[in-house]
Length: 360
Image 1: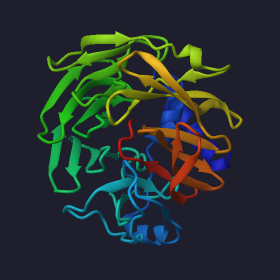
Image 2: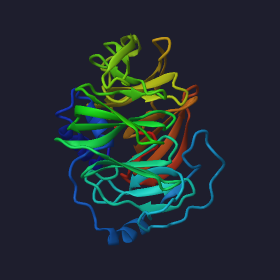
Image 3: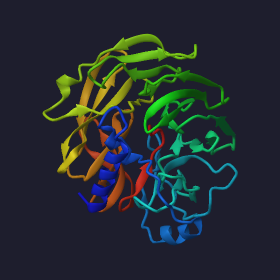
Image 4: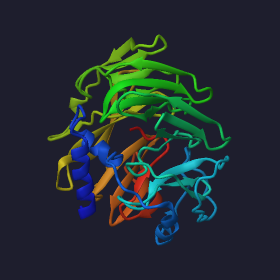
């Protein structure tokens, strides 16, 4: 494992101290919120011009034909419709401003926020860009220019926690270091929102607005399906998954976000375990949960050999994630049947990446 990655994981462990589950260090490695001093925007062109960026098929589901050649457009994101996004990334782990990449290969510089690219979020369809602001949270439709500003107050910050698979809803959570005060379920088409005051940490959001959360520790307690239309968590049903039967020695589920499949029928639970000589416990596998039947449908082991492999989205027949290996950052798709992976995009060094539909 590289020195810079070790530093990032150590930093993540420190940032995760206030989370209810120590495995949140892995989630924090993906989206650390440490206050960082970023480079001034005028330096961006000089920084990015030195980066070799190779883009394979654009990040869509299902995968489209190969896109046109990458266009190096390093202007600030303009105040007009620009198109569908494929990812947000920073070329390095520290001190690099975030870049928005479209499915066409065009790139724009985003205003720097504390925490690198991770306070930003993209809807699963790549059309909505969200980010915290002083007044609360803002959503911007990249394809038609619609912008919603959701006012919020109180201690902490407002972040996008989870998206519904169809991009029609997003849960924006007001929290302090992962301790939830309340959340708003926001309909992206109308900005209509429903607030629920709770200390519960939502794990997933379904297309119909149903919120999922673990009653206790992930994988050892019921997963609750809750209606929130009354402004509270009203239990519809709950299901307990036999996660322990699929775990190996030293492994445990990560108490974090469940990635829901595009058809709302399955969810992905990340498993941590000894890997790469790290004592933090890194992602080593995922369990695919059948939400309707309340059972573990399959276990998929993550590829060996990478310094770090973080699952991001559960797709039809594959898992999309980000791996750091051999001095490169790669967006990859892992076939769930044959365990073969395809490189979707290659980024420089210790780049940090936010993919469409990423949870917190």
